[in-house]
View 1 (cartoon, rainbow, N blue to C red):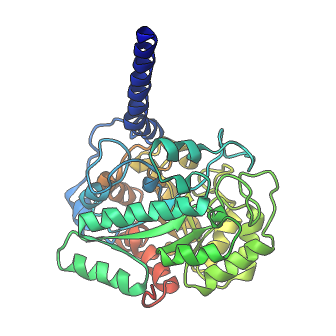
View 2: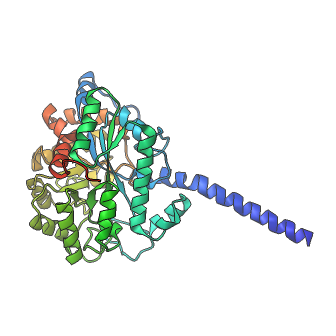
Length: 395
């Protein structure tokens, strides 16, 4: 009997140790494998480029950092973005997007909405609250709570809900403070769980950038990577109407071409494709067709340029990203191009956010003038935010 008890106790201890190892090391291992930065020598940056870079307002439309088990107030040894590295790279404004569902085996060609969900297991091993394990709205809200905690701990970050908040960030930076602005977005309105009332909850939590789709068809309509290639259904049109009415930014990244067509037809606001590439430079399915990009530009909106090889058709070095940006500026106009890195979005990059001066150098080398660089790096983003956000926060 004693031997049996000792054996059981030993097995329990081993199981506890195994569980502790999983909870401590597995989330970090997953992130490290999903968001690597290629080893490289330091990118050369001239004094002229560095001087220009220090004067820029720099903003980025998309990072998935809240998905991972990492403190954004500390300079990380993994991943591609955090608050200290934002400051090192002179980045001022970042949209932190909440991923709530991602199909197993995801790819750019076609995914089933019924495929096993990668985020469920990740949320469990990362010790997210049980309320998030089977509720996509709660997953988005929990990631918002994580960001709020990071903001409180840092002390020099503002959650931007309104133009007044944006002005406060810029005023603090003009005073020489190391202040940052953060916005909340959802990557796919399946986070609403099919209930428009959940948009009230997300809005109250500070969400201002609403992506309609991610890697699969959802309750709003067709994804760029789904089975149906459908447009919007009645619920999808209702969500679009509400996003427009509430002073939110409407993000078309990952939406089907038919959805993009229909949103363009039913809205009169600057639209955003938050992250991807320019199809005229890299013609792959992940990048929506050039004619649709032109129409997004005509709305007064912007297309965010990403930093990973699948959308740049190259090594995604600063030079290659800059070449793509220059091609997009030529085709779409200097007012229609922004940064949309997809940092920490399960992508491999050749630089992290601390190395943004190298991108400024590369844009200069690609032939863009200082005014064009200023627009691409953040001026166009500021313009769209001012056009869409409410003047004052009502929360």
